[in-house]
Amino acid sequence: MTHELWFRLLEILLYTALNSLPYHLCALYVFARQRRFSLPVTILCLLPATALELALNLLVGLGVTGNTALLNFIWAVGYFVSYCIVIREPIGKVGFVVLVMLNLNNFNIVVSKYLESLLFPSLAMERYHLGNCLTMVISLLLIMLPHGITLRRRYVPAMQRTGNSFLWRYLWLIPSIFYFLWYYHIHFDSSSSLEVATDPHSLFFLTVITCGSYLIYYIVLRLVNESANNAELRSHNQQLALQTLQYENLQERINETRKANHDLRHHITVMQGHLESGDYGKLKSYFGILKASVPTGTVSFCQHPTLNMLLVYFAQQALENNIQFQAKLALPATLPIPDSDLAVLVGNLVENAVEACALVTEGERRVTVRGMTREDRLLLTIDNTFARPPRKDVSGVYLSSKHSGQGIGIESAKAIARRHGGEVRIEQQEDLFCVSIILSL
Image (cartoon, rainbow, N blue to C red; front, top):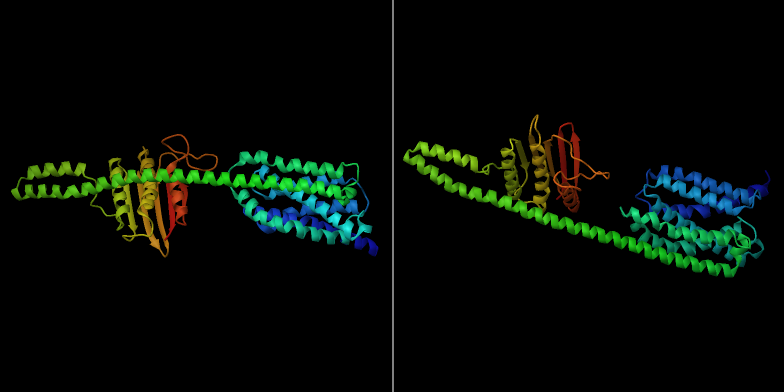
């Protein structure tokens, strides 16, 4: 192999790297959190697309074929398929980013060729040589640096949003229209693609198309982000409203238990009077009535007053449903978490546990609550036996057993845990439903 051929191969290789790597880096940056695989594996999966581009460039650069239109389309398809494999997102969302990158690639090629016609006019009608590589570096600096700011501010937030899969089914059509405008103008014009790239009128026309397309992309991505923000805000407001309602209901239950504890002192006074008068028959009768009507408020499950009152209430509910209720929480009297959040979080989950356990017709009915603080974490576990496993929807969210649609209790608990830098973990064993809560203190 001659030195000229080796040099020609190096030129084509350098051109392929400059024409491929920046767009791979941009796409991977946009989908940094949505990769299916680790970064090294992702890069290995993308190598075939780059190898395909190199092979196609070799065919053109060595004069084997001049059908650049077909080869360019084949490379675009390979580029798209490779990202559908490595990115864990709907095809429409992946297609939107890939098509935007392809359009940017086309614009960069035209700008670099036009610069080449100004700096190296004798080489302007040739492909893939060092002069072209130099002008491509210049055009990359002019185009990709401003584009990088847009990627960080608009593309990354929009692509990291979950949901809106319906929108992405159609939004990818916008860059696809501009791609085919590019494709037609470059490859099916009366002039050759090189002549189109070096013509100042074509450059002006394609620059206008590019500016218009990126204005549309900017508006679309901004609308996507604002739509997602509004949806999150509505969801957050709904959760706050539900949590407020749940807290009010739980507070009523706590007040009922507190009132029963207060009334208990008067009952003790009456029983003490019967005892002092020696009327044991009335004392026995009164004690029986009191035992059946007063909740087990004298039991202390923890030092935290709100959680203790809550557990006392559910212990009474468990007793009425013949459920064995065990709770032991080694918690201080005060915690750096609002009582309202603790009440909703623990109340929802313990209520779910008692209700699920009440449906057990055969076997043991048991609810166990444990809690402790360790370093800067609050740890809670709630376990219960159940008759039938809770249902989930296709996305893994638990469905309500009281009404149609998603359950409120677990999702509300998860929202509170996230707000306090923690999480709710759920594990299902044979006949035991286990919920673990970790909160940051």
